[in-house]
Image 1 (spheres, rainbow, N blue to C red):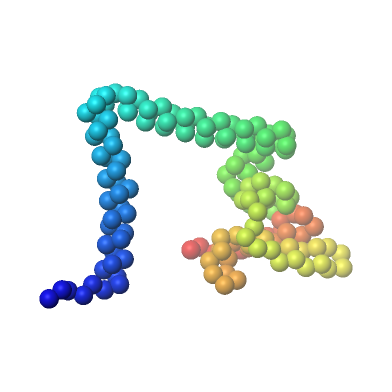
Image 2: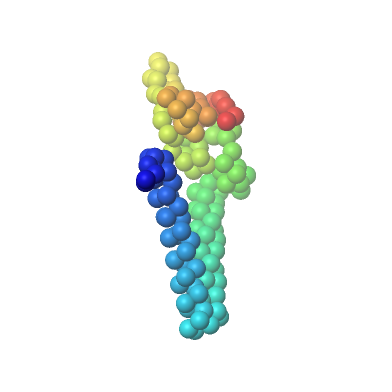
Length: 147
């Protein structure tokens, strides 16, 4: 008599097969290379690849730092942007450089000013972890909810 397999058991079997493939195939290939050409060449390839990743990340950070220094000409502002800080009087452009574009915005046009609420860290239906009030392209306040 054959045992009936539930949908959850089938799904778990599929996941285990995928994990075995993802982990097992590289180990099998490394073992085959190790037996044919030795461990030194694959190790050098892996170390070289990791070095390239490190150098790429480092050059991107340097390019961003150079871009921000050229743009703002003020080291204090640049360091605040790199630390992803918010401050009263921060321009909307500085805010975008610091936190990126918002997940959503609310826009109000008043008689004497424009008021935008920039929303970050989307948590659900119109729920956001960070709301920043921007009036006339300057930050006037924010509300941060801890998650």
